[in-house]
Amino acid sequence: MDILGISAFYHDSAAALIRNGEIIAAAQEERFSRKKHDFRFPHSAIQYCLKEGQIQPADLDYVAFYDKPFLKFERILESYLQFAPIGIRSFIKSMPLWIKKKLWIKSLIQEELGDYEGKILFPEHHQSHSASAFYPSPFNEAAIITADGVGEWATTSIGYGQGNRIKTLKEIHFPHSLGLLYSAFTYYTGFKVNSGEYKVMGLAPFGEPKYIQKILDNLIDIKEDGSFRLNMDYFNYVAGLTMTNKKFNDLFGGEPRKPETKLTRREMDLARSVQEVAEMVMFKIAEYSREITNSNYLCLAGGVALNCVANGKILKKRIFDDIWIQPAAGDAGGALGAALAAWYDYLNNERHVDYKADSQKCSYLGPDFDNNEISEFLDKHNIPYTKLNDDELLTVTARLLSEEHVLAWFQGRMEFGPRALGSRSKLGDPRKVKMLRKINLKVKFREPFRPLAPSVLAEQAPDYFDIDRPSPYMLLVTNIRDDKKKELTEEEKELKGTKRLLARRSNIPVVTHVDYSARLHTVNRKCNEKYWKLINTFKDITGCPLVVNTSFNVRGEPIVCTPLDAYKCFMRTNIDYLVMGNFLLDKKKQDESYAGIDWKEKFELD
Image (cartoon, rainbow, N blue to C red):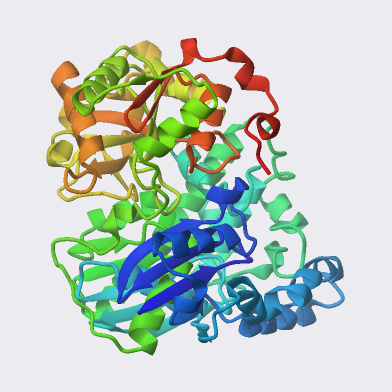
């Protein structure tokens, strides 16, 4: 039985296909459209999933959309009416999309799928998130926390999963939202809402939590069970076109920072403060979830679950024995959750759990390109390359990494979710402190304060990091082990702001953030053997069992999907080498004119 799941029209549209409960394919629309966080109907992602499943639309048994559009529309209308006539501009701006598309999801799906005549299901938004978190997890029973901006009405929910059933126990409703509180500070500190929240998380360690009490006294009332209410006098997101208002500005001493302008101490302190408040709320919710479910395990989903700093601290508090986080925790994962909710909640199918591993297939659920497809692309466009056998490829690539080159690594199926997990990655040597600025400024073209993640051999992760379990999806932040830390020199202690990144805090400084933390990716040999072998070969050369891993894209663009995407990114940045399949591309041997050509014309693109 084949079920297609779809998410669309908020951000990160996606499609997913499951067959008899097994995840076959899943991908975000942005990877095909090349429009970051693309919210439009996922035409290309759907076509990919059907192709991967080797089926036609008529072969589908069910289609599931990740929320209830009419219930969401009810919330929007009620919210606008509550504030009328304030918000008329926002209302007028949002209505055309609702009237033309969002209210007619069923018709859109039928039009897209053509020959499909089956049933279309509409689970609630948080039901889809909960299903995406619990059903692929390795737990037979678990508490489930979903926290995001807003679904239909729910913004935070606690559930309990057991076997093939999920029960919602508690909910917090709009406009009271932890996700929107965090987004308000994202907006105020000059970053883009729904995409810049992780920048706030990365900026937080540079600041001090000096605004915590001001936030608690004025913006949010937190109860012991983790429930909360926001003081809406300070926010504008319900009916306005901005997240915050003049009262919010006055509270924190001025207008929001203009995007791309210099970061000041205020932004750093604000980031640290809202991060700690978010952690405070999540700790209380986690403790209450444990209390009312009596479960030893926790599953997380929703955009807030991408806050890997909070996730790592929940794990470290040992509220639960173990936690599992949906790798595509945001709205993209809602497509997968909707399909799984149809299979288990609606159809009541039996669930089989492997207690040693989840059923997410390491989140390698996107398109794959074999050596024949890659060579066809390279030869068609007369692109210079060297073909290597498997052993040569690993040896040469590891040596180039050890010589301080930045490499792009394009192998196997593309990752589902926002993290690069060794299929669409840029790699570097974690031992050279200058690599941090090189990758951020010259390769990624992004802010210098952004931390870079380590990919480490799973069996050696405890030798370097304060962790006793795998972190396969890069959704946990943990600390560097004390014996790997280095004492700062007097000169390094005097560094201020983002210049603190220049200090060598450990023997792997590139992946050691200013607070001695790291967003950890553990690499299991069974999960990604080629990537594991590359890191192991690098260890044989250098003695270091980890590499720098950041996503294969540049700021403002999605992670690459195809060989063309990979080559374009390679030529437009200061990446030294590109490895695609068994082909090694040296930047020095490429036609430099490719960096500035009309790609649409050159590659005969539509």
